[in-house]
Image (cartoon, rainbow, N blue to C red; front, side, top):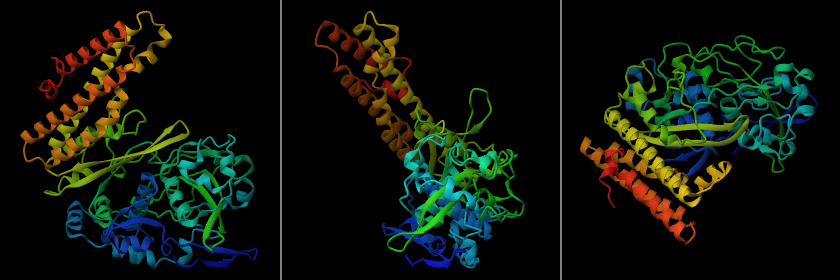
Length: 528
């Protein structure tokens, strides 16, 4: 990494300069399989020599991809029509124009620690940073804990410096995925009472789908939306914009996104970072003030081209949300439905369907939060082959149905074991007693791998017969595993007549359900 430059601050002290165009800030995988950090310029100029971005979390990787896409739009390095997009993808159009544009921007526009226009930040917070800021852990979504930050969060005060490149990536992730909650800063004593209201980031409540290509360049081209319109603002810093940004005296109405560059660089947080220099002379951050950011109007459909829609009970379609109780692979049928159904107008899946004869992967990423507390990132990858959309949708739907049915069989067997084991149960104990025998958790944890094998075999299949055979094999694997999981659960039964009876009846119930008239056809042939 090049040594950091410095400039005198108004107080005469040295302030580090850090520029992501010239400082390595993107963890990437090379085509040789090595991990290497690259600058923004290098990521674009050498995009076809890099396999992918490998951030610390799936959300960080998505945030970096979003930023690179924004640079492509802002520089005009993007297709204008769907046919043009097809030529870009098939011809592996270089992204050097975006790299040239970025390299030619004024240096002061890309300084993370600029005193009045810090990259991606709000310099209006400067008078309050020392008094009301916290340690840099507040910047990292996974480290902050509960986003109702008026609570006593001692760990946020830890002053250990955060290297500038990590801080930059964490800032981009906050803008895209920041959970809702309350900021620590006292609004009435600073910029206004609504400064404390942390809105939920635009990607925080939905599953983001990225089409993955063979290289980083391929991935960027696949996900560039063809547009003949102006790219809109590139949100370089809070204090520079075509129109004034929101204030914090009262809650503002959301603003309309004016183009793809604007969309991918929305400043979802007001952030300001205090720079420092580590003992080895590297620029870092030792204090952060994090507060409310921009609010948006509901996004138009053309700004949600990757969204997979689900229909809740009230019938209003909404983008698919990540769930703590339902893994992403269990929603694969919805993803393939988005590709197979051609009645939703031009979007990412409409374009992907035109890539005849090519296999690629669809990467799904979501953030799970319980109220204001982040739980975990979830991600999964699904194969896609143009022309095989309906087979993949069918396999995903049948695979999910079979898995759900096997889970219900295990639940019924657990109820049988419970009925025999506990002839006079207390109502309050019923749930925990049944859970003792229910092997559903083991079943769901085990099924992810066979389900992905099913999709891979379907993607490679040459006809419907092979798809049906793959489904039968998948069902057989699930049935055999279910028997094993149930027996393991029943091992805790006492070695007496009641225990033997509960064991035998539960096993018989499982066998009857797995092969009975209500079972999916793929399970009925498995009599072992």
